[in-house]
Amino acid sequence: MLAAVLAVSATCGELRAASNPVPVSVQSAPGRFEVSALDASVAHAVVAASEEAWRFLAVPLGLPEAFSTPIFVRVVPMAADGTMESFQALVEPGGIVSLRLSIASRVGPMARRALVQALLFRLGVARYGASEQINAPLWLEHACVGWWRTHLDGAQLDALKYESRSGRPPPLEELLAWAPGDEEPKAYANAAVWLLTFLQAESGRAKEWPAFLQRLLGGEEPLAALAACFPERFATAAERELWWQTGYHHVRRVRTLPMLEPREAREQLGALVRFVFAGSAEDTDVVVPLRQVLNHANDPVVAADLARRAMDLARLIPALHPFYRNAGLTLAEVLRDGVKLPMRREELCAAFEQDWNTAVDIEVATTAALDALENQGTRR
Image (cartoon, rainbow, N blue to C red; front, side):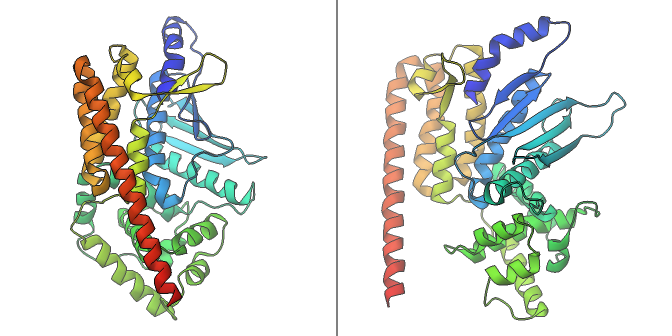
């Protein structure tokens, strides 16, 4: 993100002075999102949202580190008549995924849906190529947006639970068959988040949810795919519905904030300390250490990016896995005091590195112990 900010910082002044604005192109990270817009501030807002989406959806969607080609986003101004925000995601010949997005100055619910839909299309292309069967189910689109919101802000999870407190969820068959063009009641969107939560929990350490996701993206009939990927859960339609209703009421009653798995916590915390600058050579990026970035904390562009990361971290800390909680708290000190107090930067960065390495060591040891225990049970 920082690379993109710095790469166009000089251009922004020229744009303001130009009588006919020209598009600004901003890249989130290689192989992820590339955003073009006439308004640089809008482009940066969309890029920041795309990185946020990537962080929170990396685990449930099984995202790679990067795709071979990014998702190309073109932001166009809203019509003068106040037409509602809109978007169109397309899989073009050759497997290029593009997104045409019409928004105002900030990234709202419609833009989040647009980014999620494009991400689902790109994931399908990575698995199946430019097939006409690639599908982004409407329920999954709403589920991913809801997952993103509730993991970004714990208060949104509380609101979701409150809205789901009464009544029965939509029948599973109807929810899975929910298609673009149908009405989009709030109850269906809420239930979609719980369905995503339930299927991941039901899958556990197995590969059932990832297998189901791959079949959905490939356009397979959802009920058949569900039966194939979650065997021995149900034998009839009535049993399938009971399985879903029971799971729905269980996950919505869990009285905890969403806690990230160790891998999720590591990846999201790691993303907040990964700074990429545009290199001197064309089309090259350079990863810059945290200490070096802090030495330029007085630069307005760098200061703004550090402030944004501090805000993201403040929202992330309550959901961090216990392995990474200390590292998160130490990083918060770095982004607060390390910016204001140059004499403490080395001390704070060293403390964060120590907490980070300890957390990674614990995660590796715990994973190895669990794998050994699982293998021992299999042999028996």
